[in-house]
Image 1 (cartoon, rainbow, N blue to C red):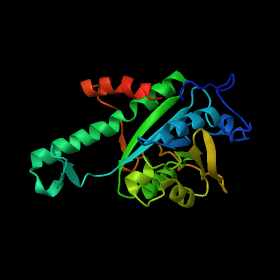
Image 2: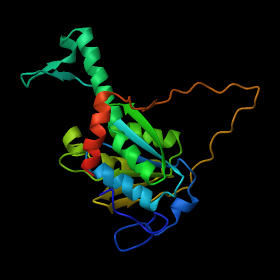
Image 3: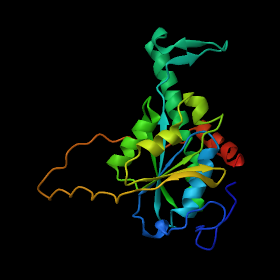
Length: 238
C-alpha cells in the first residue's frame, strides 16, 4: 500500500475517495498533525492518508504509540506467569524486551516518512487508558489534527477488548483538534474542530528559567540485530 502515489505535490485534495477538501496541509503549522500507530495495518493507512492530505513536503508529523505495562510473562509452555511472581531480573529483562519491541514498531513508519520527504517525531507513552493519554497529549501540545486507523479485529479492539479507541478519541479530543478515523485509505468518520487552537504559552525571558515539565519518551530505536532484521520483514508487508 505504501507504493500508491498522490498528485505532483504528494497531496490528494477533495476527490471522490473520501479525502478532505480543505488546504489544511498548506496552512496548518508544523508539528500540528498527530498519527496514532499500532501493529495493525490500519495505522499504515492512517499515516499514508495524513501525509497525502494534511502535510506538505518538509513538514513534521508526530507518531504516537501507547504501550501497556505487562501484567504477565509468557512461558515456553504457552501459559502466563504474573510479573509479581517472577524475580526482579526476569521482570526487568521482559520489560526491556517489550520496550524494544515498541521502539521497533516505528521503523517502517519512519522509513515511509523519509521516502515522502516528511520529518517525523516518535513518542511512546505507557498508560492503561489509551484514549485519555492521547487526548492529554493533544491538549498539552496543541495538536490540530489527530489521525487514527479504524478498529479491526486484529487492532485496537483485540488489544483493548470492548474499548473503541477511535470513538473515544473523537469524543474526548479538545475542541480545537479535528479527529480523522481512516479505514483502508478513506475517511470512515471525522469530528471537525469547532474552535481555533489556543495561543502557545509565551517563551520565558533569557533571565528566566523554564518550568520543568515531564515529557514522554521520544522513541529512538536501538539498531540491534533484531531491529535490523525486522525492518525488511515489516516493509515487505506494506
